[in-house]
Image 1 (spheres, protein in one colour):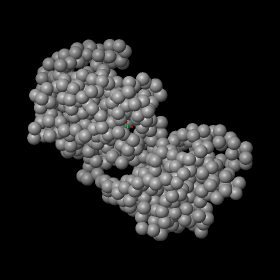
Image 2 (tube, rainbow, N blue to C red):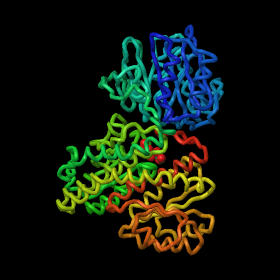
Image 3 (cartoon, helix red, strand yellow):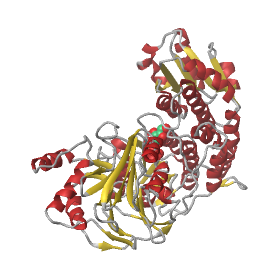
Image 4 (spheres, protein in one colour):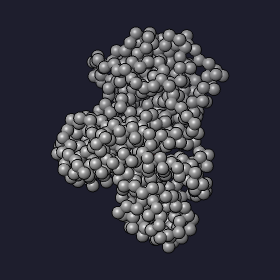
Amino acid sequence: MCGIVGILGLEPVAERLVEALKRLEYRGYDSAGVATLEDGGIVRRRAEGKLKNLDARLRAEPLGGTIGIGHTRWATHGAPTERNAHPHATEKVAVVHNGIIENFRDLRRELEAAGHVFLTETDTEIVAHLVTDEMNKGKAPVEAVAAALPRLRGAFALAFLFAGEPDLMIGARRGSPLAIGYGDGEMYVGSDALALAPFTSRITYLEDGDWAIITHRGAEIRDAAGHKVARAQITSSASSFLVDKGNHRHFMAKEIHEQPEVVGHTLAHYLDMANDRVRLPALPFDIASLKHVAMSACGTAFYAGLIGKYWMERFARVPVEIDIASEFRYREAPLAPGGLAVFVSQSGETADTLASLRYAAQHGQHVLGIVNVPTSTIARESHAIMPTLAGPEIGVASTKAFTCQLGVLACLAVAVGRARGTLSEADEQRLVGALVAAPGLMAEALKLEPKIEVLARTLAKDKDVLYLGRGTSYPLALEGALKLKEISYIHAEGYAAGELKHGPIALIDETMPVIVIAPHDRVFEKTASNMQEVAARGGRIILFTDARGAEEAGVKTEATFVLPDMPATITPFAYAVLVQLLAYHTAVVMGTDVDQPRNLAKSVTVE
Ligand code: F6R
């Protein structure tokens, strides 16, 4: 989280820094700032809140200078105030930072003892002082940074600006991503290629531990040991146009509505639709001999993985262990060599997922990344990737990336099942036939939007909501609850329906809305019994089902939403649309900031 950018320009840079920051706002949006050099001296403008506040500040108090750095923040250390906003600076150095400096307290104590005065609660401020301290000892900027970097523990991407140095910027990367952009007589740094797209498509991604000395003529890249290294320059395909909302009020609404198209696009990438076969890209491991799969991801991507586990175990009869990445990375899971480890991530930058990936790679696993950003760190460090073709997802709450992840996971499960002989050719054709129908059924789900809007007006008055589901509807219950809480701030919990009587049933009374996701599948009857238990205690049942389910539910519901009958394999695609729409419209009724909910960021690059 946090987005950083830097420009060594030929023209004034402040406005362009803000333009680039707007493209990084998905990384954090609680405060922002820029620093440039005016007459060799560091000058800054910072503002609490979203970038428009910084924009206004710069209009009132413009900044000159043809070299500068900028930052949009997601607070880790210190409240999101103007004082804690980046860039942090001394008279000699300004710095912007994405990540966490874990040993900042020790360093701060040491620097305070040496007479440095700190003005903020941030971990970042110590970086400016540490480099200043080295410069006070007589070191030039490059040597000062070289001395300071090894003292920092944690994950970071940094960009430095130095007083009196209009032709020097230093960028450094450990953990968090950083790209260098090459222009005509200008140079750039940024958290990703998207930020730099209006300026250049010629990009070099720094590798972990790299740092770069950048002037208007180019960049000299050094590795962690200080040796000069060559890193490839690529042509980025990131679009220079800011994605817009089309006719929708929010990006989230647009992204929900795009799903039939992007899921169709993703499936088309992995399916031979003419022959109802799965067609995976060449993979550097043999899926026929897989004995074990480990999966790891965070949040919504984790729930996609959980549905993938149900499919993989059912179709391919391969045991799948799935973990939340922040747990997997530390639990020292024993992994038999030669297993497959799958990492699911929209951004491809999630710190915990990346750390899990590295653990798996170190323990002899084949590493497969399912990512939406093919230039991301997870994509680059995976042995193979299966991209989701969702297109840029701007709304912080993941929607279309989730259903595209489902598309990829379903194709993978069917392909492994075929390769292992647990699925026959006829099974494959039947399953592919079902998958091909998924986008159309998602479009059917979208038609229920007006009715969902009505329900949202009631739900917006509630304080707590329970979601229940069984089988692949269980992860959807978790996802529905996550979506609702993150954008409407209503407390919601997802449960496996069978768990109801092991505790949560105590919550049921006539005020508690219980959203039951229950297509008429092979576990429907079991879920119907759970609905009876809720009804017997006066709970308010809201049922997402199909015609048969509605008929056989046997309980009085507050509202029933009926989707067409569909093969069990594709219910998660269509029912996901319903839980997304419900969360979206509830948030709209509540008047929250749907696309940028409080305290969240799109790309979670700190653990
Ligand atoms: C919820 C949401 C998050 C992300 C999670 C993982 O709507 O978007 O839970 O799914 O932060 O992010 P990625 O997929 O980028 O690894």
